[in-house]
Length: 116
Image (cartoon, rainbow, N blue to C red; front, side, top):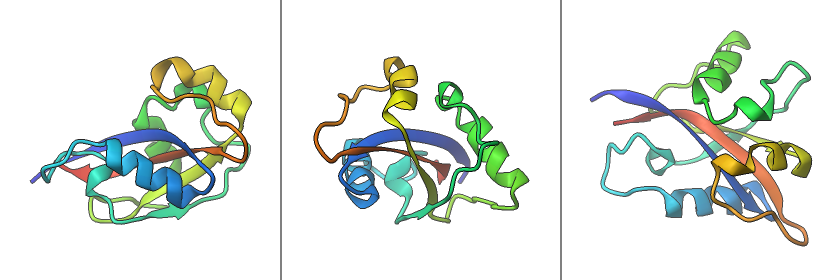
């Protein structure tokens, strides 16, 4: 089996809720190369050197950044998760099909490598 990179942006009151929503929306069937193959996520802090959210439709940039930090992500690991601001999300909203958050919801980016 192979592996491919993925990126999902989802909203939720918590990262756990956003992860569950992203998984529910992903294709099912095993070896999909999507977030559906992941059992969980690791929250990571986002330093100033993180790729600009405008580039987050390309998971290769995100994984390259993580690899440079020494955080290897293979197809069996949990994916990574960061929280982004509403302003950052507005800059990339055209690539994702979710509404702006309301109330206490936040925006989370999940990325990693999944089996396909």
